[in-house]
Image (cartoon, rainbow, N blue to C red):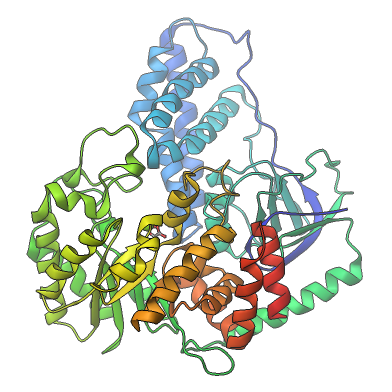
Length: 550
Ligand code: PEP
Ligand code: MG
């Protein structure tokens, strides 16, 4: 039997199937001694859980370490303890924990954005604390003796972060999209991963007799695979890995069509790490991520010092595309807070904030110009969440007044439709496929349940990208892609075929993208784009593009 999902981390893994341990619920007849006993038992269990997660964080790195540390901090968070205390009259510790988490999860969900995303962590903390209180094994992923394939409905971020790639050689998940936590961490750990496998069999025997193969490049999940098929796929994957490791840039198709391969960065340290990869610059510098914990606006000098560090990481003449503050919605900035909005993703975010707070944009542009003047980098500036031509025109005027290249992100369908007119004012555009998907499909980019709609292979998204690229060609101006779409090597070829001139993605993905583009001709990219545009589903688009690139 074979089924498919959304491939998110390429590679081939095969072995016995394992499943995460079931969670234990608070027993209906849990003993209650008194309020203080309940509070003390919760505190002890939460401290143990936090300690274990911190210990695991110390053996991890990058996103995995951050997730483990954040989950650990949540276990001992004062807010959680306060809610448990509220429910401690008449309830044992497991029951009080469960009730407290139900209340908190409702509050987080109502807040939306990043808070809502943390509900999964909250449930994970609940399950671990309840298990600790009851003295049963912590729920989570087993540590099998032999290399195994993990099948699950969904994974708690802390479970994914704690995986050992030597024991769990592939992951198949029923839920989740390309930007889910599971996908992001699996990518960092290099574990082949397929998400959104809607008919993944989760009732297989847990005694190691069920075997499976997961192909993270094609999205296939094969039960009881033929050993010869496993070997053939492994050999092809080894060859691909070799090409990825050997790729040294600059970006070009095998017949010499240049495509800039750039990295997305967010601070000086990340920029220096990214610069160690064979990139030609930074295609998206997410400036707002340096200020998430700031209550007040950083001064122009403070900002300039931060930007200087990032500019210093690239070689002389290399491009750095600075994005002005993308505050609001999933990236709330206290000093640019626009108050409560019923739909923050559709509210006053990104460039829209400059309407009522023009000084925020001016100060930032002054800081970028000051830092650029002291640097040898080729500094370009663009703004997020542009919808109409006058916004682009006014922005370009302010950026040009400071002697810098001006651009906008194409993240709303209106901006994509207006690309010709917008390009009359700006020097370049960069397509933010994460938000462009969200707004095109009216589907929250954070929603795992809607992951199939925000899949960057959706043909409607590809049609919009094609239109923007065509506008860029007519204007003779660059059109980049800086959303997650650019991190998928096969999709990157399609983007090149659609006419995109630069690709910017996580630094960890650049070699795979560069190597894949280097393995095909421009004509193949165009054929792949053409084939993908004619399909009706992301699955068919992937299959059609792969066939054209083979
Ligand atoms: C995007 O929306 O695709 C993008 C690159 O911006 P961000 O993910 O930071 O919103
Ligand atoms: Mg965006």
